[in-house]
Figure 1: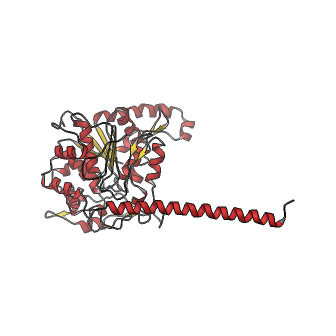
Figure 2: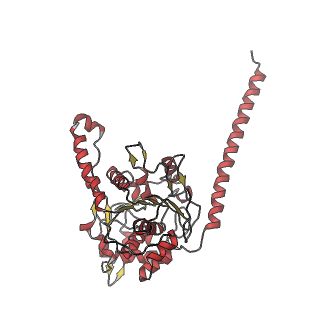
Length: 403
């Protein structure tokens, strides 16, 4: 029989071991975070390189072919927009980050491509007020992440007198709610014919991918409630994937791709892929939310050629479920789980850009990255030869390839 002293000794040893394990883990967590912070500080720049691209889109001086070559290393002899079908650009009515729509659409339009928008119900996507405000302080980085050039490009798209404004024609915006969605289990148990009806409607929904040559899902906070869990959108993304057409996700828009499962394997379509998205440093720990449906026509804020931005922002009604200290989405964790042990996660802390091309998949980390992402899409569609394999872009120069 053990003595009281022996029992007490073993208890003390267990307590010491627990304390040592916790202390070691704490040091590991803080060391990792310190490394990320220091890497970010070393990489961060005073200016956003995308501001130059936005400025050249505004004055029309941008040379898209030269930019594709500079960023991807792929030559384009000539664009062939007439050979291609339009690009479908999904953006949320609950709030899209302006540059994630305007830079992608601006590049594609400049190259002569047709761009068609899609939203949850066919309404006009809402560009978030903070995404057009250079004074806005980003919730993670505590600094401005909107250049005046990006703001001006957004205003260009919002201007009813601009040619870019044509993509907001409500009659041409696709209604994602028309895509087939599976029946709930309980409804199927009551009526098994619902599955047959879904199968019929699903085929029609997925055939929509044949009308387009690529799909891009833009981010912004609205993509989380509006697009991330949309099973109709998932099936459409799957159709683009099966047809081997480019699939691009920006920021929170990439979460829709993450949720898309290939029924042939039972795995996410991103399994084993190289990807990027928000790292843990990019996620807001408080102050996150999205807007309610914006029911005021954005055209009404224009008067005598000037946009009443203050009134536009005042008309936004925000839903802010966030509590302090808790990120809404752990994108890095979600993507790392989806790609599995054979995948590659790429998101260099503080780098000017973070874009990964893996075959026909293009993932973009955050607000400026739609620009190099769109250039990569053009390199896939019209490159001579087309861009293939893996490409990692983290600077304002040609990306690098690796396995």
